[in-house]
Amino acid sequence: MKLDNKFGKVAVLMGGRSGEREVSLKSGAAVLRALQIQGVDAHSFDPLEQPLHDLENFDRVFINLHGRFGEDGCIQGALEMLEIPYTGSGVMASAIGMDKWRTKLLWRALNIVTPDFELVTANSNFAEIEAKLGLPMFVKPANEGSSIGISKVKQAGGLKAAYELAAKADPLVIAEAFVGGGEYTVGIIGDAAAGYIALPIIRIVPKNEFYDFEAKYLRNDTEYLCPCGLSAEKEAEIQQQALQAFIAVGCKGWGRVDFLMDEAGQHYFLEVNTSPGMTDHSLVPMAAKAAGISFEELVVRILELADVE
Image (tube, rainbow, N blue to C red):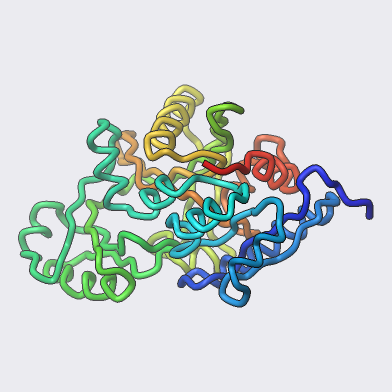
C-alpha cells in the first residue's frame, strides 16, 4: 500500500500505566488499524515499554491513552517539551478534565448545571453528607475513568465503605447526588480554528444497575440509543450547552461530554472525557457513524487536528 505522507510518521500511544491499560490497548489497536488501512505511516507506541524520548522519531502523535499519565496532562506536557503535535486537548484542559471535582467546580462557577456533590475525606461527617445529598448517591474517585472505584450507596451508613473503596484508586473522592432519568453522552470534534461539531446524542441503557466497567466493556446487552429519544429542540439545546461545557474546560480536538437527565427532563452535565475510548463498544465512533462519519474518517479528522499549544 502506498503511504500517505501528509502526516509523516505517526505514533499511536496505547497501553500506558493507568488502571485503564487494557482498554487503551484495545482502543489503540483499532485506531492503528484504521490509520494503516488509509495508508498512514502509523506505529504502535506503549509508554510503559518504550522510553518517551523515542517519540522524537515521530512527526505526530495520536493519543489513545486513558486515565492517569495519558489523559491528565502528563503525556501532553512531555509532547509539548518535545514539540511534537498531538491529538486532543492540551495540558491544562487534560488535567482539569481528568479531575471530576475541579471540572464540577469550574462548571458550577459558570452556571453550567451539574449534579450536587461533596468532597469526601476520611474525616468527613458521612451521615451529614448522606443527609445533604440524599440516597441513593454515587461515590467515585475524582481522577479515574471507566467507572473504576465507583459505587452506588443505597442505604444509610454506606458512604464510609464506598469512600474507602474509591480512595484506593485516588485520594480525592467525591459523592454525587443521584439523577435517575437516564444517562447520555455528546461526542465533540473540532477546535477554534476548524469549528466545533457536536455529534448526535447517544442514550446509554445498561442492563445492570448502572453504567459500570462491566456494562461499558464486557457485556453485550448494554443498549445504545441513537436517535436518543429526545426532541430535536432539546437535543440541539443540550448539544450547544455541551459545547460550552467542553470549551469552558479548555478542551479541543475531540472529546465527549456526559450528562444525566432527571424524571422532569432537566439535564445535568456529569464530566468531560478528553481521551475517549475507541473500542467496538465506544461511544464517539458510534455517534460519528450516526452522523455519517466512518471510523476511518473519524480517526483521520482527529489526527488532522493535532497540534501543540
